[in-house]
Image 1 (cartoon, rainbow, N blue to C red):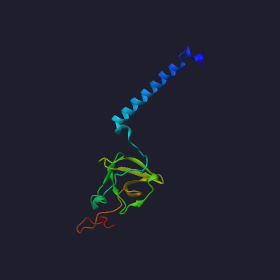
Image 2: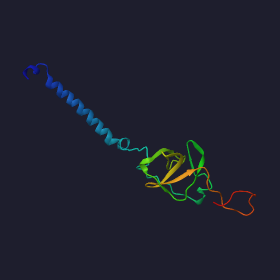
Image 3: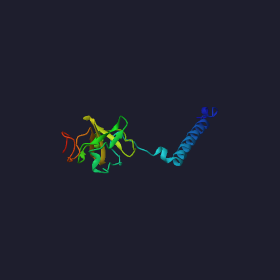
Length: 146
């Protein structure tokens, strides 16, 4: 130990330790001041998503209700009741154009699109499946009914 004293090794270690503790103190202060920048958690699946879809009207079947990048023309609701899907199996694609909820797909059927209505519950969206109700006087041969 006496041989190290003339090289100031303990002093150098103390300066190094003080420098590291100063860096930790500055980082902790920045996290405290800007907590929102550091306090986030993002999942690539449906886990943790609380932005649930609430149908606004019955016209979800008859008018395109879901628009997002890649499908600007819109998709129609295809299921009447939510289907059970595991949140961990769903893959998040994008936010809808209104920015209120996420659009998901399932690895087993990537051509189908879903929105989350509750935990492990999803509504399917896609091409038009249901036709408008029959109205007398409509054009002959027009599809009607479900």
